[in-house]
Length: 280
Image (cartoon, rainbow, N blue to C red; front, top):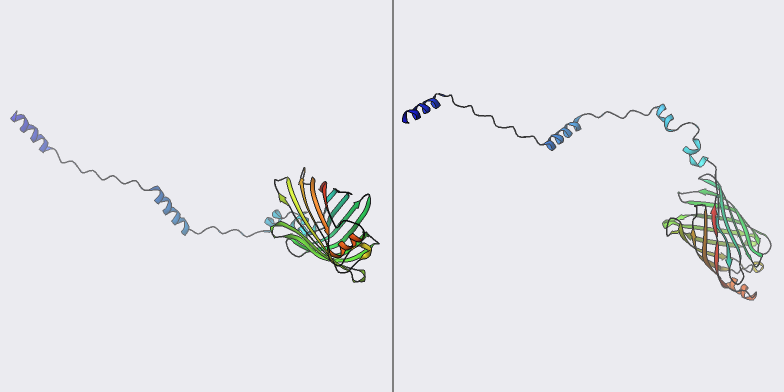
């Protein structure tokens, strides 16, 4: 036993020592490698954007589309019957309001027409012919003439005003008139479309009239003459066709109310209205 152990120990001593193994190389962080590559790419010069050529311009603006590249050169038209309705009360009748324009984005011809009937008689009828020019993105200045056919004898007014879309989407129309004999008239109208859904819309309306002189022939008194308010609920079957139902209230004031009382007429009235709003 002793002899065998000594022989085994002698064999181990005779073997050469084992070489030490090299340490394992740590795995590099991939994110650090990407960040380093990104930093290196920043230092590299970027290829410049080539200059725009005539061929590029021709491809962007083909021939024959001049009316689209500058919109105000294109002739357009818009005809709106904002109110085409029957107003019912003790005595009812038809109420019509039309606004149309013809022209471009900057210069237009505006035509406004209004008419009212009661008990089968035309009580009010007038038409405007106005030149309009856009002076800002949402506003136009208008000037022209207004012709009154009813009530009384026909009368012509010179007209000037502004119209447009005020902040919070209020549609505003303010017009001043000068007639024969130094008569003056100012009219203010505000409308607003409140969308309950994409097709169901409530439209409140407020209108105010002021006259500078008494006009007994038309039963109009000087000063604040009348106010009218309305609320209409319409449903757009299509954008161009919308039946509606509403209620209106109007009142004659001060001198105009005195003329109405002398004629035995009511100074205020509430009416149910139903009709259709359409445009093309």
